[in-house]
Image (tube, rainbow, N blue to C red):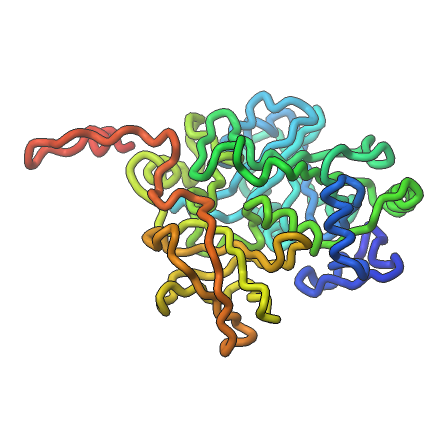
Length: 377
């Protein structure tokens, strides 16, 4: 069901990757991207799920289950948190905002059912309720200030790429990070009001934009997405998600041991990179396309898009051991005979170390364990 009504607008082309539920573009993706960068576009994000958690124990309870510190989260302040497996693998990323009475979770559609069912099973004696409200809300995306026509509704502001309290980073500082130019916000509008809001925005001169424009901004901002940069092996360190979604000094939660161990002692086996793709090829490598270094497969493309200024760009997960200046090639799954050359920009430092990783211990006498091993850190 297209709750935003934007698929009915002139020129709308449905996004097949999202099951045709939202618009991919409206006939001029270049103009849509430019309008979005200027803060003068509204993006159809009606595929996203909205889960409401109510009850007086909601923040304490969610804090105990997920990676971010949610205790005392002020109403209207957006954050994000991760749901991890017992082994620390990423299972879901949740946009979080509280309105003083309920905590709202914005979730990719592929994970919505799992998140809702798992949270429901974990209630036990806690005073909480979990409701999937996706059919009652239509989600719209904006870059920059939310216009008056949508400002009175529930707003989640993306914290990327700012390092949250208790977080850390494996990538560049905020002063040089390309993501600071992106001021992404999602607004959950009641379904009954969504079409009127979209109509009001059109009267104010806002350009309707599809997922193509939103993805172009996300990829250019080096922002990981759960529906793309995550596979069965992904840990948060590999995609620099400790900067916005993990608190390293909070209490226990599922998967915390892996978060702490890799941060303190280990190095993530893979690292996220930004790829500038050769624009002379007509093929845009899709998700899952192989990334090669010196003819050897070293990773896969996770997201790709044609950007209005940068041309064809992509995010990819590659082996951490690949040199930061190594030239790469990409082989598309749909056109295996076409090899696209790519230049990489590291997002996660190839050293595999965060900026605040504890200093290593000095030489030890043979047979003595390291202090960190005794303490289990």
